[in-house]
Image (cartoon, rainbow, N blue to C red; front, side):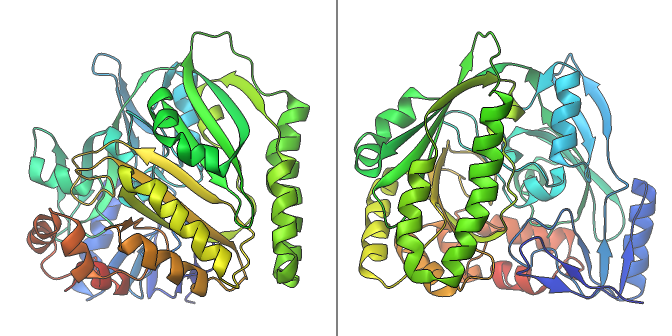
Length: 432
């Protein structure tokens, strides 16, 4: 009996012809070859945290939940090689036990390592970039069932593209990440007026290793977060205070507030004013994944665009003006982060210092009018949408905003000429 796959947000679903749960690379390669013989397209699905249908297929759906765990740690090279289906939360905890850490990470760690890197998942950083930018080597099964490995020295043209490969070049089976000795971060969370954040944005970015902020629409209020390396000692968030901030206010009470706002949209501005004042300043010091990541239990839909960093202050002023003059009622804060330029072909930060603007709506709330208005602003500034978040852009647009777009599609022609890894989403964003 066929089963229907749905993503975390409920924005994508598909009913594959069949599913496979390979327990080894050989089993995965066999599954790909059999799919080719039967004329089935192939997609791999991780935790379903992408908001787009990037993993959807009506052919063979590969679930990598048996391809997990660390293959090896190389302390001379300071790398870790991990199976593609490993959830980030398990990798982070395992590395910490070994006295190691990734340099930077996003704030959600439910994704598999392959799903997170293939879609360009990122955190915020002045000098350190996305999870994919920390990749030193990669292994994938291509359309003919063969195993291809790549790095800066081995198949470098594949390495340049496959770190953020969108699932279009093959099925990732293992990833080698750069790691470093575990370190401490001091997090400083502090409310701040939006006008001050925008006026001081360049300084806040320059003075902090990791700076981000959340603006609450319908208010002039923000919550800022500055993470910087610390000599210690560790001073974790207190259990009671941490539960109040991370569980009660950021999840429990926020869930209630969003539900009320969905039922009574006119109440959203008043709720936003209350929500923006609920979180007070706090400072704590802990190992990286306990500072970078946080639980996200309130379900939402999201659009995020990467902009040239110098454009973001003006874009946020446009965004605020648009919300103020519109009938829209926005219950979720707008999140702003940064990243240095990198050299990955389809990275949203490829070739340019970037700032990210992410907009969200509570699941079940109409979001298209808001996202359409936001997207109009972002595309006017050559914005690049996150590959795993809602957007309406197509291959013609991406050919304009990515200098290496033609190189990626040419590599895809070589590795997957029959479009075994194609689906409607990839057809839209990469073309045929």
